[in-house]
Amino acid sequence: MKTKGFTDADGCAPIFGSHQMRESAPSEFIPENSTPAETAYQIVKDETFPQTQPRLNLATFVTTYMDDYGTRLMNEAVGINYIDETEYPRVAVMCGRCINMVANMWNTPEKAEWKAGAVGIGSSEACMLGGVAAWLRWRGRRKEAGKPFDKPNLVTSTAYQVVWEKFCQLWQIEMRTVPISRSHPTLDVEQAIRMCDENTICVVPVAGVTWTGMNDDVEALDKALDEYNARTGYDIPIHVDAASGGFILPFLNPDKKWDFRLKWVLSISTSGHKYGLVYPGLGWVVWRDKKYLPGDMSFSVNYLGADITQVGLNFSRPAAQILAQYYNFIHLGMEGYREIHSNSMAIARYCHDAIGKMPCFENYSDTLENPLFIWSLDPAYEKKARWTLFDLQDKLMQKGWMVPAYTMPKDIDDMTVMRIVVRQGMSRDMADMLIGDITDAVAELEKLEYPTPSRITYQKGLKHKGHVYTH
Ligand SMILES: Cc1ncc(COP(=O)(O)O)c(C=O)c1O
Image (cartoon, rainbow, N blue to C red; front, side, top):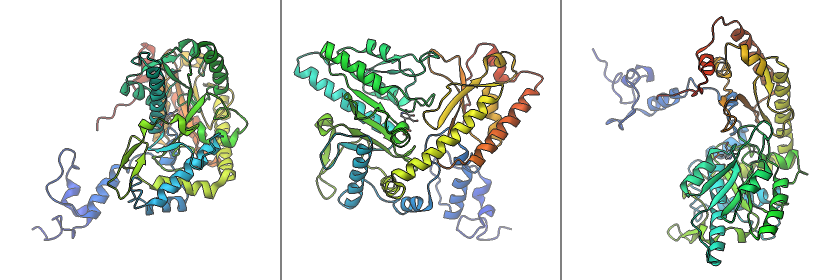
């Protein structure tokens, strides 16, 4: 007999005695009836139960550890919408202060009290805003000169992050890509200049290339563009996609010129949620001066209690990340960021050395510019191996690590690499555990008598498609 209250969803059933726990989780329609909060909570929580621990996820650049105070501030602000400036005016002030600090960290020449910039949900929104501004400025100049403005293009390397493909596709801008190769592992400046013409809205170098962890040489690009612009009379600017490098270079390599110290760098974007050390999602974009932020990009509304002007693709957005960024700036200071990133760099170098010493591997570059690196199978070893880096990825997943294997971009896509991104939250002890797990996994793979399916795919010259998740 059914005991009243124990199998009905009235809040009395023990969580795992409830009928919901016997049924598959809703996936198509909103359920007709309610589910007690603690049962619904358990269902949602358990969906993520078997996943990798965020800090063992060495694939992501995004923050997976914040201290208790930062976390507390974010949790307490979880209900605040940034756009409601009239209701939460101090959040807008804090956002402006963060933009000022980021702009000054990048050596802005702007003297105004409030620097020209915007908050984004991540680097993607920040990149889009930088790209749109470059396109509108170019279009404005073309219109004024009575010239056609229907064929804009943008120049970057094939190691671009997917946001630039999205930007070019969505705004119908031709994307011109300079191939990267083993001999030119970063943006080849000469080739980039050869791709420019009167319709180029900007060139986009990357500080902290997603695929390799290296930095494009922005100083060399700036010099080359200066000569090119002087010769042609064009005004082609640079937008630096500094998604990760924007919060690394100022602390670990402050003398390197890649930012507003360079003449043609008119805008820079970064992710506050990567090496800015804030949980997702937060991005920043800063312009060299207000005059480079076209007026058409500001939109005003009058129905939130005052006239509110904002620059952004989203309207509503969480405020918690802004509080956390401001907290990090105050709490860590330049000193704290320097120490945390120096540790990440030291741990990345330690892993890089250890992996470089294993006979089966070859590091992509000898030195590290950012706390991340890639490596591949040693070419001689690869010829006789019965496994691939995709098999190693699977083995490491069994130990809880997410260390991604992937094929490189166009032109060197026959090369498979593995990447480790070291962030705050990774200690030397964890690095030792990781290296131990890699060593053990390789030893097991070397015992294989037959090639793995991924190796057979490789031998047939087919591209590994990566994992396909069906749900
Ligand atoms: C160079 C680069 N640009 C843009 C992005 C997009 O950043 P977000 O995930 O913050 O939108 C990334 C993300 O990894 C990146 O590495």
